[in-house]
Image (tube, rainbow, N blue to C red; front, side, top):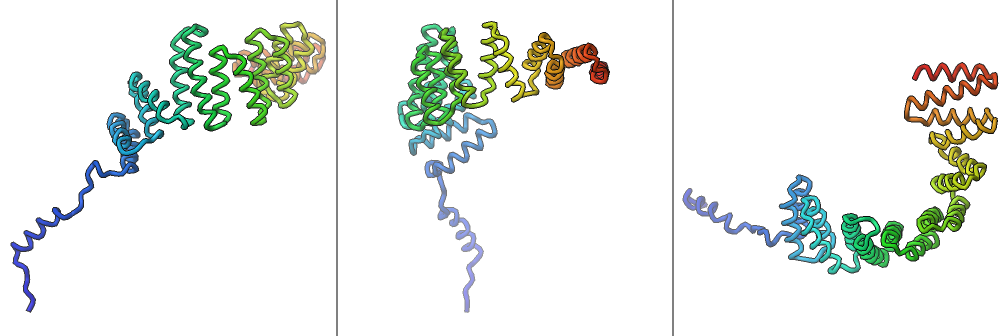
Length: 309
């Protein structure tokens, strides 16, 4: 015959069960679990709790990703001094991590911007940032890091390094549009003739809209109007929605007496204009030119549209 436990015995067993249930303490939580909890706190805006958990992960293992998370959160909390300590130490601890080097470079550029542009401190910080970006580039040769090196070195006044970096971009990554960047660099140094050559090279190898615009401006300043209009015409072809180039072209051809082309470009200027007053003015100009050429239907349509604006 089976014997049944008395109620008192059942009570004792139930009370003892929790004593034998494994309990996971905070110290035994895995880094993955801590990271997930930290990101949850971060999403909730509780940066203090998130940072505390990230710190606990770093007591278990080294992690550049976690360190950068802490850096970003300290910046969000506006604890700039702490953020500086974190990113500076990370740059020392993880010399072969491109992202750490990049973030450290960005930190230094922010420091530089606190000083007057071109001052000794401004250039000093940008020179240090250049080194950090070069380290990122050494680890991972991507366009992002090439550009970072070029921009920082230019701000630091190291024009030779800037030009060489852009040339590496062109040669290694097949990006001819960076001839424009070299042209602008030459303009900054007052090397106008060399700048024009590099800008011309940019438009020869690719339809570089900005290079066309810069060249048009340079030729206008040199009173080479025909050449300038040629490049503005290319801009209008690539981007007919841009009002300003079309306006210049309209005025130019109006001045030469080619009203048909003038009306064409004024029409594109009107369509690309975001200001109602300017759009109406372009339409009235079209109407006046069309009247002068006895193109009455075009004149009527232009004046009528202008009245509706």
